[in-house]
Image 1 (cartoon, rainbow, N blue to C red):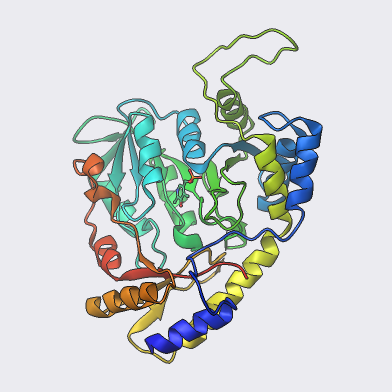
Image 2 (cartoon, rainbow, N blue to C red):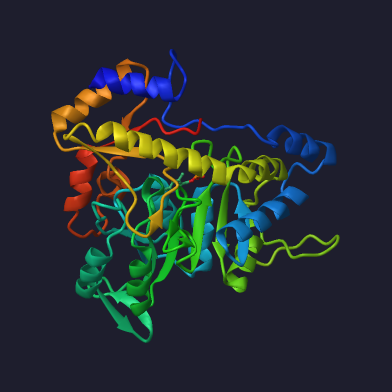
Length: 380
Ligand SMILES: *Cc1c(COP(=O)(O)O)cnc(C)c1O
């Protein structure tokens, strides 16, 4: 079985030897052409035509009105939370099963994360658990949501679409609307993923995508905020450019800003990558189908698949192994064969920085943490 799997993977990636990573980027389009063009233009930094082009491409692709390109996904989250009105001492809901950046962005605002459990089928924030948790924890006063115990405002919620799988985002948004909690989707991993024919990242007030080197497409480093709210988009862009007041020659600033704008040379790379995104998604969906067929012969392994009415970008394929020894055997065997596979992130609520944070019952996340592994998922 193990041996068959390693053969299957090596054959699929057409690589008999050497390391097969979980995910590597692919540059087989206009990447070099656009980067050289950016260099020739001398506009390599945070002003340039590729940044604007990229924002237009993202708007068209995701069907969003506005996009703001920034230097990475983490500070896209940070800026979104700021412009959504998250302030020091506020509380913000997220999930324990996520990359640490989600919680860190909340902490940068000096707000306190709450960890609410995920669903086992989506690996993302659970609307049913969120609903019960808010009923117990929250109350609405003068139009704002407060934590009954601490008296602090619960101002935002950051659900995350894990590995490109859509979560039940429409239900999460509906519940948060009832409580006047603003939803910022961490769609860092799910560019191109649809739920009910709508792009993940466009259900909430704002959504965030990452273009780090390990994501489905990359700008080297980069991120983007999407929203339909003109005011929020303008504020995010303003803050990302050191809050410099727009003027032909004068240099002045009206707020505490950040140097978060995406450089043109990174945008050039990403513009080329955008041209291939749909092809990449098709390729990844095909790989997930092949893995599905492969694992259907073995009853102790489940390949995690998209929920109904969704189209996953299948950024990373993951396996669920009910038997814990079996999981460790998989990890050991594959890594010994130079085929990368790794367990899911340690739950964020167990990290030293977040141990004291409030949380719901986290049975699903704890169950998943012990059983999930990722396997090679690159486009090829
Ligand atoms: C990658 C990622 C981020 C952060 O993106 P960077 O561009 O690496 O800063 C945030 N959240 C999740 C879930 C991610 O996977």
